[in-house]
Image 1 (tube, one colour):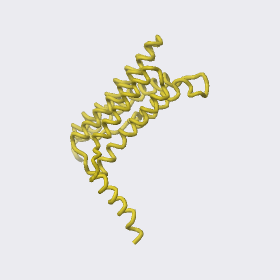
Image 2 (spheres, one colour; image 1 turned 30 degrees about the vertical axis):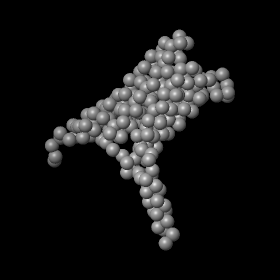
Image 3 (cartoon, helix red, strand yellow; image 1 turned 90 degrees about the vertical axis):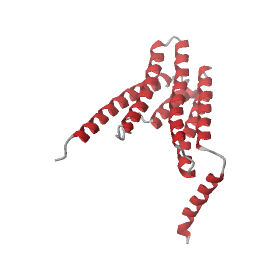
Image 4 (cartoon, helix red, strand yellow; image 1 turned 120 degrees about the vertical axis):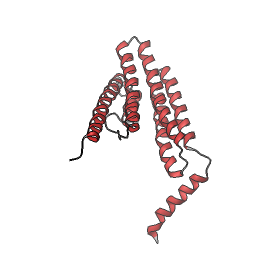
Amino acid sequence: MSEHVPGERREAVREALIESRLTPNAISITGLVLCLVSAALVWQEMFVLGGVAYIVGSVCDTLDGRYSRMSGKGTPFGAFLDSTLDRIEEGVVLAAVAFTFAQDGKGIEAAACALAILASVMVSYTRARAEALGVECKVGVGSRATRVTVLSVGLLFANGLGLGDFSLLAPAVYVLAAMGVITTIQRIVHVRGELKAADRPAT
């Protein structure tokens, strides 16, 4: 009898989620608002608080998909909205970082932020185009979770976090830009290989 308890609890949780007024879109929008707050804090060079807001906002972004599946409230528009807001959230925080670099006269670092934003968009775009062609495309070193982790570390340690006179913000941006470029190339090569294999006659 005890073997059925976990399943019963999961079903009870699922029923509670279905009955609640919370929607996946509400979680997605909450994540967006927190990332906008993060960008504003970074703009004021309050990096640690900005990093915390970005982490919490990104957690919301992760939870909305899981909540959608658990509650059964997911919709095609919700999936579209989630993917769209992902790009906005990452881009707006990186734009704020670029602004702080530009204010300090760090042109190379600001340019790296622009490249990181472009690369992030291309990582998402290549996957979307591949899936439109019927090719699954989740390959690459620069997954969203990895990018969130790298940027979060960079923000939290932008001023050393009291551990010393150092900053990890510029290195984090360089890593983001490199990962985005590499992932885009990996996905282009992957899709090319998959499409060529699909066109190859069976032997």
